[in-house]
Length: 510
View (tube, rainbow, N blue to C red):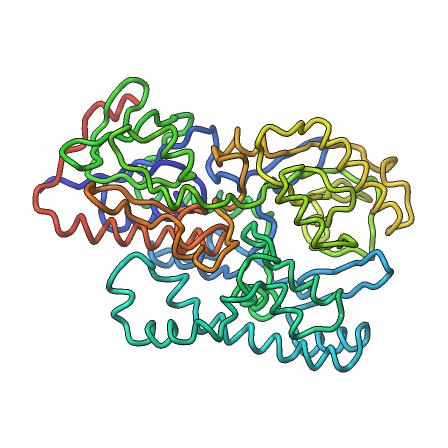
C-alpha cells in the first residue's frame, strides 16, 4: 500500500500545527505557502536596531504548543522556551485612574479595592469565579471539539452543558452582563475589552465571552524567549524534522475536484494530486479565489460579519518608561461610540482605545540601550475602500496626543523609526478578507455554530479547514485547537479508505 498524501495550504500557526500532526501519522505531507516565510501573521520586523513582533502579542496556553513537540517525541524545551509574566496588563483611563491586573487573583482584588472600592472588589471576586466556571464548563466541548460532528452531541456531558446555555449569558451582551456585576463604568469597560480578543463588539457579542478573562487573569499570560516569532520558528523546525515538505513562495491557484472529491492543487499551471487537502486560509478568500465554481458556497457562514481589523504603528522610541509594562491599554472616553464608529466602517475615531505592547521590557535585545520597541494598535473596521492614508495620519495624531498627555512627554519627538500596518496591507500579506484579523466576529448568539466546520461537508469529500476563520476561531490557542480538529478528522477519514492515490511525481518540480 502506497503512502497517503496530504496537501496543507497556508503556513500560519494552524497550518504548521496540522502538518506536524499529519506527518506524525506517517502521511506524506506537503505544506504550501505563498510568502517567503512561515508563521502567517506571526512574523517579525527588524528596523534601525529595533525588533518588532508584527502580529499576535499575547500568548496564553503554551501547553498547546508544547503538545506538538511531545507528540513528535521531542523535548519542547530543546526548541522553545517561555516565561510567565506576572502583570497581565496595565490599564489607563483619561480621568486619571489606572490599575494593574496580574495572574494573582488576591492581588487583583486588592488593586481593584484600592482604586474602585470594596464593593467593586467583591463583585470582581464573583466575576473571576464565574469566568473560571464558564471556561472550565464550555472549553472542553465548544472549543476543543467540533460542533459539526454528531459524536460531539452524543456525549452526555455536552448535553448537560447545552442545557445550561441560558445561564451562561449567551442571550445577553457582554456589556449587559458586565453591567450586572459592576457599578464602575471603568470596570465594565475593562472587562468589555475581552470581546476584542476575537474581533467582536462587546455591545453585541454574547456574555459567555466572559470566560476569556479567565485565560488572562486566571491561567496567565506568557512571552516566548526571543519573542512571539519564536513560536513559528520552532514549529517550522519541528515540521521539517518530522518530514513535512515545506514549499515557500508557492501560491496555490486552485483546489480541484474530481468525482466529488478534492483531489489536487493547481500550482504554476500544473495539477498535483493528493489524497486530501487541508486549508489554513481565510474562508472568504478560499471560496472567492481557490474554489472551482461547481463547489457550493456555505452562504450562512460567508454572510457572517467579519471581525475587526487593526491599524498598527511599530515605533522605535528613544526613551524608556518605567510606568509602562509589557501590555498596556489606554481606554477611550466613550467605548460605545468607538464601537459604533467601527461598525459604521468609518475607520477613524477621534478617541480610540490604544493598546501598547513593549516586548523590550522583557527582551532587552529588541531595542537599543535606552530605547523601547512599541507595538501600538487600535481597532478599526476591515477594509471596504476607506482612505487609509488619511485614516493613518489622523489616527497617528490622535494616538500621539493622548499618549503624550498621559506620559507627560512630546512623544512625536521620541519616535526614531516607524513602520505601519493597515487593513489593506494585512489582506495583502495574509489573504484575510478585508484584513479582518479573526475571520468572522462573534457578534450574535449563534456565531460559534456558524464558523466554517473543520471539514467540507456535503456532497464533496477530502477537504478540511483550520485557522482563525474556521471553528473554533481566531487567536493562537483557538487556531491550535482548530489544527487538531482538522488534522484528526482528515486522519480518521484516510484510515477508512483502502485505495490511496499515488502522489503525482511532478510535485518534485514545485
